[in-house]
Amino acid sequence: MAATGEGGLKSVNHLVTALKEFRCLIDPDSRALCLELVARELESELPVRNHRVTNHFLVELARECLDNARVMRALRESLEILSPGAPAMERLDSAMEQMTARPALPPDATDRLRSLLEGLEVAHLARLCRGAAGPLQEVPPVTGPWDAFETLARMNARPDGLTPGLALVEYLAASARPLELADRLRSWADEQARELSLTSELRSLRQQVGHAALAESVDAYLVIQLLPQDEPGRYELSSWHAYDPTGWYPVRGPVSKVTAATAERAVQDLVHEAAVEWEDARCIHLEFVLGAEDLDLPVHLWRHELDSDFATPLCSSYPVVVRSLERSQTRRWYGAWKKRWQTFRSQPERSRQLVVDGPDPDSPRSGDPSALVARLNTDQHVFALVLNAPPGASLEGRRQASAAWRAGIPVVVWDRRHPRDPDLVHQLRQKPVEASGDLARLRDAVKELRMEAQAIGSAEREQHLGQHVMIVWDDPTRPVETQGRAAGPDEGGSR
Image 1: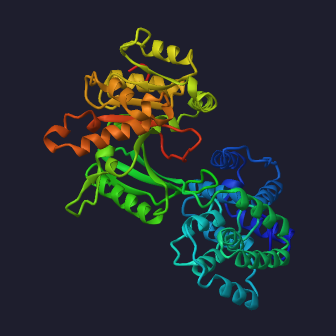
Image 2: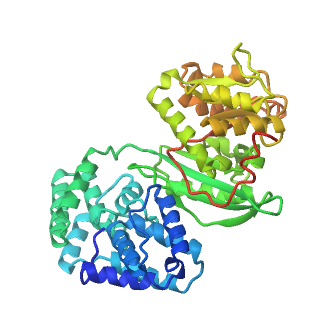
Image 3: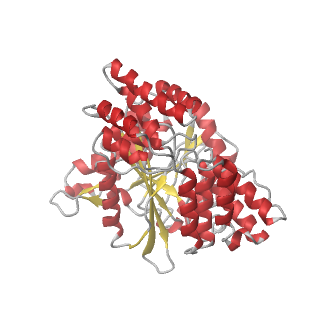
């Protein structure tokens, strides 16, 4: 993102002035911590040296912020953690807004665009807006193409330097009919890009939009984290929304405090908001990030439509999986996790699952978590592990789950009851989606079992395996920035 306004150097000076007010950027030790937090958010090292001379450090940091909007956003979030509620934050926000603001369009250009957009019918407008805004900004609901342009025109520049409003015109042109209208929209965009010295950036986006099959629906993800608090039965609830055809760019929602009794309703509200926002999504996935003690929470049975006569479990409408909070907060386990996922993606036909105390002669046996880790580490094609006990309610299950996290196993399945239903493995293998041997569709087999349970009478439902089967589906390529610390990550293998 190029600096705008009265010149690049003046923009650097304005930002340096704002950053000087943060004491954590003046002290060398806390400065190093801030850089570490920024690098963690970016998932890459920040090319800024920790100069002995504070002003040199701030100049280099400001330069990186002005060149890359992601760096600026990550720095702001890191400063919010290190200096919560600091008065300097408001002045920094003002400086950042000034740096990234773009000049208003001339009135004649605005009038010409409005005439082109009036009456334009657009499919998947919300998705086009998200693509145009870029990965760092959330788009509020819009009512039509012109309203969308006015909304995006007030947003900050994208990482590539384009204004979201200009990018939206390019997205609209790609789907506009007749083709004459598409050409007129592109001509308008070309004219504005020349005025802003962004011709090459617009051409690059035009090529990307041309190759992206935006007419096809994509999956959306609502990730919900329940972080245990000191008082039992209380949680901090966080959520992330991800629905972008160009990649994984989760947007964090507001944080709230809930109890075991109120969490279901809070989740219902998040799900309903997502259903309205993503009405054009191919599928909405619900993923719950849970701590070690809460892995057996029957979140798939939490209901929505609570205030109606049709309160039904979430699993009746959405695929519901669990993710491990413990693993997400233990960085040293990431290498094995990512490596195993990559092995599966490159050779899915060789992927296999192991069943603890299973019917096969080579099945691992319970009772020795160290042996289980060693067994898993010797075979990089093991993608899924079926536990013989629930990890949230039994010591044996907890040890097996912890062995899976250490070995990088992405998919873990278990029965919430103990002992495990002897028919669990057979049922999964009998499902059409699993009978093909495609372990990537194992979560579909679990969803089918759950749907079967909901379709039978309430008297028999509680005995059906679909009520109790749980699945962890942990994709390391779709991270969210979890907060807090899981309790005792080193204790799982020995308790």
